[in-house]
Amino acid sequence: MPAWFAENYGYGLTPLLATFVFVFGAVIGSFLNALLWRLRTGESVAKGRSYCPCCHHTLAARDLVPIFSYLFLGGKCRYCRKGIHPSYVMVELAVGVLFTVFAVRAFAEPVLSDAALAGLLRDWYAAAVLTVVFVFDLRYMIIPRSVTLPATVILAAASFLLGTGLITIALGLAVGAGFFFLQHLVSKGRWIGGGDINLGGLMGVLLGWPHILVAFFMAYVTGAIVGVVLLAGKRVAWKGQLPFGTFLSAATIVTMLWGEKILTWYFHLIV
Ligand SMILES: [Zn+2]
Image (tube, rainbow, N blue to C red; front, side, top):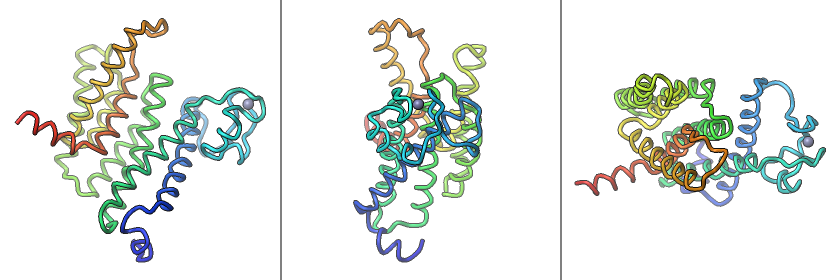
């Protein structure tokens, strides 16, 4: 880490730096919106400008400022005045907040060490990947393999380089992927698809053993609660299917942030 950076920011996240981190996160969120759209349509992320999905008008730079463009345009396309789905601005806000929360944790030490900085980059990357899975499964009921498989390799390497033991990573991978693979076998693919197995593996290498259990537990509990609420509300359109990848992604982010605390609390409860 450069000395000037440590001297200025190593002793805590200043409000100015926190603002920069939030804006950076919102910009990444804006990029993830484009990525989500192109994942669906099969267009390349590298090629072509963003356009309005309604009128196909190419968007200018002033239409693409995260959060502000949406607010300034009153949530409508500048060219055709059709409403922009609020999920776009919510992704920008959410990634901005997540990046800031992870930064607050990394900057909690008196001096921001190289390891904490590297860990922060890993956490930001994981948060971005999980946000994509969260939204994509919620919108389309699919967990995209083209996102989860490369991310699993990258996150496994990152965890290893950051000092997580190989056994912790391997056990996490085996439990994460194996848990869904068994259900896939037992149900002959009716309950659980390949997407869940891939996401389980990603969660395993990221969280390791035993934190993967915390995430699974949280995802099942929140999934069950939402399922009961939806049933009670008798939503006509609801066919009894839940985007489980959405619950798993959210539970993974919560476990990344507070998994240790939740585990400690749980052991105090049963011992
Ligand atoms: Zn338009």
